[in-house]
Image (tube, rainbow, N blue to C red):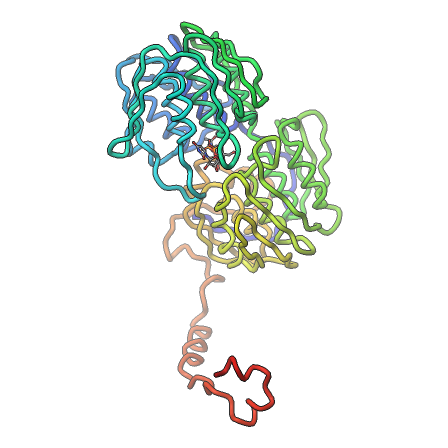
Length: 466
Ligand code: EPU
């Protein structure tokens, strides 16, 4: 868990790492190549470790260097099973389905199971692969897929909440090795999908239309390994910007790809965060009071759902009422009750959180439910008065590379400690006197249940009392 002593404005310079959501499908796509690939700027995250284990179980040699370079080479093309024990730890393991099917003609991949950010089916992945000619069955919690050579076709990947990011990755990778032309419409346009497409093209694929909803893929017979650089993590960039803003600090953040952040920078500026860009570095400060906003998370180029929780944390401290809606994952709101424990005033209403800004948050003990919720709680803890504890931070480690180290270098006061009662800050535990007081209060006789007749006559709530 983390213990955080909040209320310290962050100052200094920091840098953004490689994007988790680009690295994962790209690592999986290396399964489709005939020779070794070398990736640069692979972030050091627990999700990357988990996927490395999945890939090793599928006959791949994975070598990682501390500088973020990763070498991936298939040394045994026989295994086709991605086991539940690994897949259940990380949904993105499903990204091996398309490459395995295209390269090894069969795949057996566990269905990932439940998820704290809402229902996450993979029907669109399966629809796309079936359209390419795969025979797919689901048995005992596993997807069994097999095919001869896949055949190019027209595929529509739109779903009730927009397109699918990893579904587009799976189908695009499989189509790269199919016979003939595939046209994917309603493809996801996220920069991470584009980065994967660029890697596949470097391997010899012929993909046009990257970054648009219409992809044209001329299938090739073979993909060779390639050298490729992972794009900067736009979600980490926004999280760091909000860390500067919520603590009313002054930060410079380097390695930011501004082009990927247009929508969210626009929103942050409208809230009152000053963001000055110079090349790939942004300077963040907050010269005035934070203003409320009405934000909707949408597929790219909209505001990413992956920053919805962090923006919610920021808007808790804005001067007025904000509305944050998530149209990508309409149930991604488990951070709300935890933020409320810190003094936030938020009401969940369907796919929205309605936030009444408060002047300050107060340090509390809270529980992280998923990756981005953990980031939101950490941000709230940085801004809160007093000490906070965030439990289950293993969620955070899935997607942020030692975030507390980066933040501590900027003046934050965060400690990573074992989750044990002895490590709970004394400020968050009632003193013996307070315990005594609470016990005494509880022992006092309860107040009278009914008002006296005289009171009832003068009361307008008579019917309610009855
Ligand atoms: N959906 C379907 N059917 C499908 C697939 C998706 O209905 O077959 C729905 C989902 O339920 C959701 C929407 O479509 O409502 C979008 O889901 P998508 O498939 O795009 O999500 P994903 O590919 O599983 C990736 C990221 C997520 C990110 C989403 C949305 C990776 C590894 N994960 O997930 O990242 O929130 O796209 O942008 O790329 C995170 O990093 O914290 C994270 C959850």
